[in-house]
Image (tube, rainbow, N blue to C red):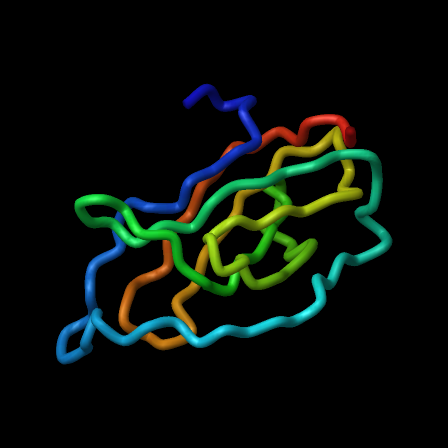
Length: 121
């Protein structure tokens, strides 16, 4: 995937933690996105969170958007039931990285870095 592409499938490195059960279904969580207005703009980054397998399975996870330059957290949200997430109205002049965390603590976090936002549709 080219570095300038804004879609990120967060799959790699999803390994069960020792003593955990990977068969636990994700809980359905609905939280509004939080975006710091100091970093707002006309950019858009979206992607999908997947649990590695055959085939890869979409999942609900906590997803955070960080500014690549200094790691400042810009926005946070949960992915939808189909694994998709979207960060809208972000500064399009910056590069970002997205981190997906497993709130059930069965998997380690995964990251997609060097993301450049697309213009808002």
